[in-house]
Image (cartoon, rainbow over the protein chains, first blue to last red):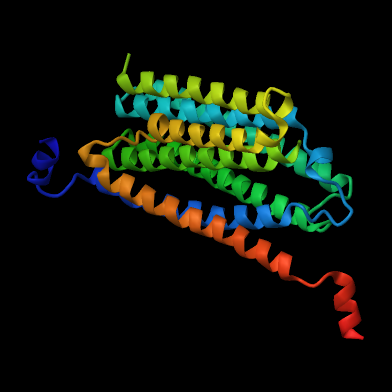
Length: 197
Length: 107
């Protein structure tokens, strides 16, 4: 019944079509990730006499990274709801937390990379490490882009207030941020948890 | 409280629970050792579902049908890319002459 009603209401609202278009972009991004995941799965046994996942992964810091990313996804959702309810103070508080948690995730990841490179276990050491740095680095690059995007959005909302076109962009950002979390779930299970056994 | 805030909070709780379960499965002998990869895969897929429903607000509502269809197509392509790559590369690997035989041939 409700499907019939909406199909007779004319074209869908901008909120729905914009989110749909951005969702298609995100799916294409996930497909790109899947190619890198496949490369990792093929290359990860080839350690060329170098270290394997079991010797280099530190699950404690990985657990902390996961916690940061999950909580930042949560505060991002809270921020979106606050902005749509025109509660700007709560929105800025939630997005400041989102930024801090995302930056914390990135800091942990960079310190892991630096530790490995410091032990001469950088991406040039073996096919396994090349694939590891590509996959985890690609996800980290997405998080970095998300943090930059978040700053621009917060600044725009601070200047212009919660206009409807900014709320649509905010919705897209929330989709992006949650999708990165989904990619991280796959990464955590395939790379870190299976690799550290 | 806003209905969506409740949804996000429930999602966070479930996601934390599933993540904790993944870490537990990976670092203990709770599961039969050869079954651990399968267990981790099940937990990961469950958590992705939780994220889709509670964070991305995927539903079967009328406004959401196109999103679900696009997602289904994305999942199809991802499966083809990953399963196809693994399948082909495993066969190439199995049909590859051992390194010593290649050295003999190049003489």
